[in-house]
Amino acid sequence: MSNQNGKMKQLAKLVMILMLGASMSACAGLIGHTASWEEEVQLHDGRKIIVKVKDNLGGYPAIESREHSTIDETITFKLPDENREIEWKMGYRDDLLEPNSLNLIRFDVVNGVPYIATYPAGCIAYNKWGRPNPPQVLFKYEGEQWKRIALADLPLELFNTNANVIVGRPASSLLKSFYTVEGVDAANHDIYAPEFRTILREAVPVNQLCPEWVYFEGSWVTPSVIESEKRYRQLIQ
Picture 1 (tube, one colour):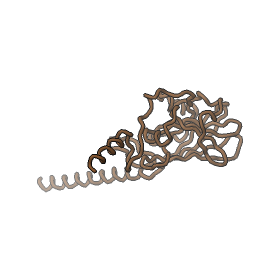
Picture 2 (picture 1 turned 45 degrees about the vertical axis):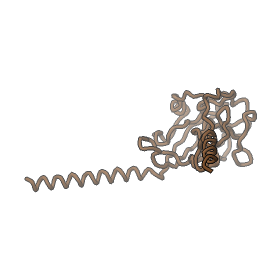
Picture 3 (picture 1 turned 60 degrees about the vertical axis):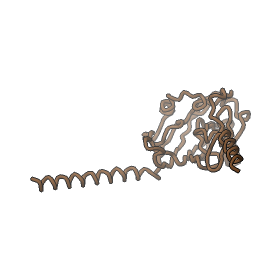
Picture 4 (picture 1 turned 90 degrees about the horizontal axis):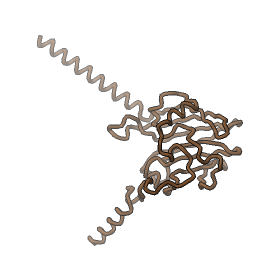
């Protein structure tokens, strides 16, 4: 009997090792992989286009996270009535000093010119982009590249229009390969913050904005931290 129990224990250990290995392999398989899907986008004039979204995925941002982080995202738009595609690409890394980490709210075309509206994905990104208020960043496609524009340069037709792409959802939570206009609206149904769902024309109250942070010796901190550090260094000199 003891010999049989020993064999059963060894078999149980082997099963556990195989299960653990399979689990680790599954997780590792996601890291560095991509997620892609298509969305049907309705423009302000009622026309519809198809956009292709491709995300490069990284690991879990925290132990308790259920969704993988996005390393970068590429969105390809096929312009209406044209056999031409344009791209929007954005990376998501807080450790980079240059502005990055924008989430798309809306893509549209006015008089043949493409425009996009975005919002900074987090407070570090918000400070990198110069703390705009309304807290959104706008672009116009000109000279074969996206150029940032001021609020006053956005066509009037686009003010107060709502998101027409899926906003801010982790790629690994999107389980369909194609989303209709109605599917996009459904995915955005629970977005309540106006700066995440609508192109705003008016500034929002200052107390609703991210605190001011600056980059100091490898970290993003508040100005008060820098002043405290300067006073401390003066004291110990």
